[in-house]
Length: 441
Image (cartoon, rainbow, N blue to C red; front, side):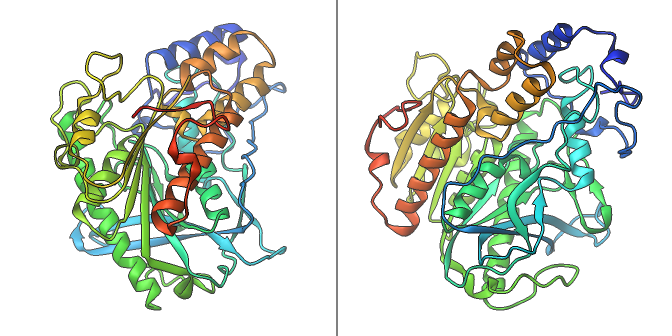
């Protein structure tokens, strides 16, 4: 991605349909600009001089649970791991907590992303190497979530679910899934994996993430091992929080109710893409995670060449759900999109197992991009028929509202069953409630 970026539709010297066609090509070839070449942070350089350009703020689907939501961010330093690139000389992470809160009408709603992160994530998708859109099209920094900042936690003990994002992906782009689980009574902990995913620290310090694109198999294995260590460290910090300790590296106190609000005896985890692989690996390494879910992530270092990940070879003695898109991770040899790692895991798995397919979807349909792309392209280009082709190339042809609802329903049912021991009729077989989802086995 060049550092000199277009600032308006006219400066690209492309027609509206030309822009959309460029976006279609980007989606079809799975080109994702790498974060190392993102533009410097300058919110003022945004399509200046073009009166027809307006950044698009997004509407997040309303959570389906009954709980009001709170959110807070925490800066963690792992004194047990050396990282010369950090000011502390130790491994540093940013995590967010989304949680059931008491009612508080005065606290502000959280923005979707911090300002610098929003600009960098926008830069991934805009420009000639992305979707051929002007910089600033994705107004993540001013998009508002459903969670209020730093409000007290609801005074009950809540199961905890950790989340690990896809490769090079911010922890914020699965907010719709995270908020829904929190609205149903879970504390959800989302993790940015420093030096791989983009991360913004207090005071504006920003790390753009890895520059290796596409990653080599050795990079994937190293990333999974690093993520596993991150997860185990976060689990240790959850216990410290439950014990009443202050864990934030800058001394920030967590909102009222946190120490008594975490049920650290009931911990689950899910992840998207590489985060799904990391979820399985973390469960293999740490028995504190009682149940896991993998959203369309291969369980090997290279989907076609391998080698298999340890979790694919050995399976787990606790429940694990595979939830794949329509074009990846099949367990049947000879079928389209066969993935040896999913087949190996299925054979080796000793705990409960579930294998679902979200029809008419692609991998990014398991993120907020499912509805973000739809809202963005329709806001800019209206009902131009090619819009649907671009969206299909990027996330598939499933209706965004239905796809999000189905994902939320199955994730909630799965963790309700595995962490709360609540029967889940939805997990017994294909359901007329969600025809978008098919049970593979």
